[in-house]
Length: 632
Image (cartoon, rainbow, N blue to C red; front, top):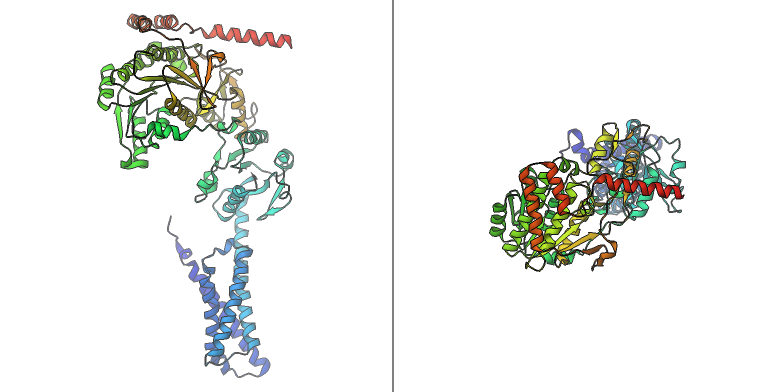
């Protein structure tokens, strides 16, 4: 906390001296007036001074004891003034009793009551005048502030309002509340009206000059939150959200914790939380290795694992910057409580992988190391094969050689009927795991999920950068739909699947309904206070190499098996023999030796039967859409 500067550090003492000055002025004015009116000798002014001193001592002493001088009177409300009157009355009773006992000249009771009451009244008046002055200054400054409406007049919204009103440096000027509680509508909270129900916002915000809306209902369920935020997106206002956990920021600055709307606010489904106790037992006191531990999913896995008391956590990554950042983060949070090791290595280096697995002897391996960018891997298919296929093969067989208990592969929905090299290599990685069934004591499992919000290279950060730059926002095709999940959801799915895994299984998450990418782009523009196609344009750039219009999570919906979690399913795969797998690997190895990218692509189609050209798949989708439109 910064040290107070200037006179503000002596605020309590200054207010105390002000009260003493007020009391003395009242005393001398009234005592001087009494002699003139009643013929009282002027020397009594000084004779009564001890009595007056006792009066001031009681009054100011009681105010000091009640912490009245600790209050910031520019923010004072009814409670502070009532407390001051009550303590003042109590102080007068004490004064009256003591001055009767002490052998000092007595001020006539009526006169002492007048002096006392007038002193207390002027003290309160001085505070009130100061408060009005500061409010006037604040109001003048608010002409430069952002006029905002607050959705939710509950504890969170009122707490936010209080902080805004009590912080002169805050850049918000609250204009009104909106709340669905009929008892609050039309009422005023600290001078701000609850204007109406939330659904009435589009009508009631007209002519209010509101440019920002703050959603302050942390307890709202995801479906209602999505409805309200989508309504806000049509109001041409910048929309922000109070953090989900209000209690977590009560001790800090609420207004500083107000954040921009995230796309997961618009998913319209409950945030998925898995059986933490089962995962805790799975990881506690275990030696755990995470390959690709510095990436988006890998680093979140490491954070989740660190919370569950592993015996040792080994982070393996080829990119030292990410690994270093994660190392510093975990050391800062856990210190010596976490036995953390970081190794800079590539999974393509078979001997280094064997050395690491043989040296640390992990009981669990989470394999997140992979090239994942679809267009880049279309341009460099040989790198996808070397890293994704042969890198995974190296770690899988090292796990088998050194008796790892469980091996968990991070897969993707792009492995389902793949139309690009990246997806095909990830499908092949799943096949490598299938080939180990029945010949290894290690339990292998693949975890498959869709697009991860906020991960490196994902579309949402790109949209935000384009909006901040003034547009245009680019989408490859306005028909594209995708499944989405958050990084914590993805990491928890991986851990949960690892805890329940048997062998050679593919776990998939029920991710709800897919989301149209165009809708995401339009909503982000609207929630940033702009009008799509007017303020910021949305431009189609054409499908990228290897990209298809619709992603699938499963190969056969009728092949699903339920698990103990209602959100996780198992898709059993056809077993692949070691002989068949070795033959496929030999085909890929020969293609890499030839050195031609087209040879590598053809080899991937040969070893992954479900790998198809994206143009073929997209033509089928387009033909189906046209057929359905003609039927209508």
